[in-house]
Image (tube, rainbow, N blue to C red; front, top):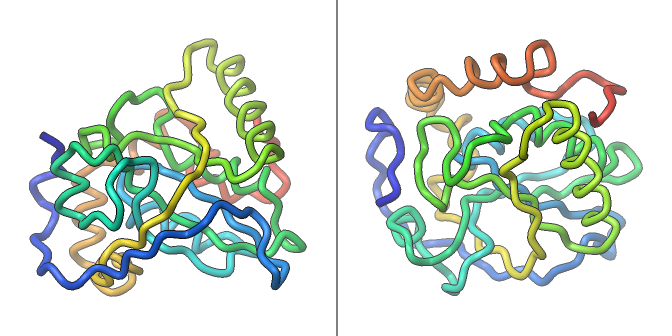
Length: 212
């Protein structure tokens, strides 16, 4: 059974905001989309909200076989979904390669079926690609890391099919509930593991850094 660390606060269920989104990396307004799974979507939101050129982040679910799932359904298992963050960004200010750089340095790329203290398939790491260009860039970045660390990278690269937004109380959780969020994050030892894997690159916000 999937679980999050026992210090994670109990949340009051609200009506879901779930909305299926079609696969399209470029929008009519010139913005672009990316979808990443990196364990707890609260933490992934926080990481990408810091990136210049990211316009919006939305926590939700992708990769499964159940339409419009609730948070409880996903973490209980059997839906096939992972916790993901959909990122809307301005490609004139930040490119997909930079988003990949930030993604990798905010996950443990060697963990299978988990991230940090969050255990279960819904917490797997994955890149959901929306077009062939994203696929090629994602594959190249994963291969570069496999060569760098000389070991297998567990992170999946999957075709994006649909995105379902999580309930409202999950959106911007780190901003709305900073004390509880920071306690959860510290107890999960997320930052310690990132530093163990990535050293000074942990967090991935060094401008102009290479993908490998």
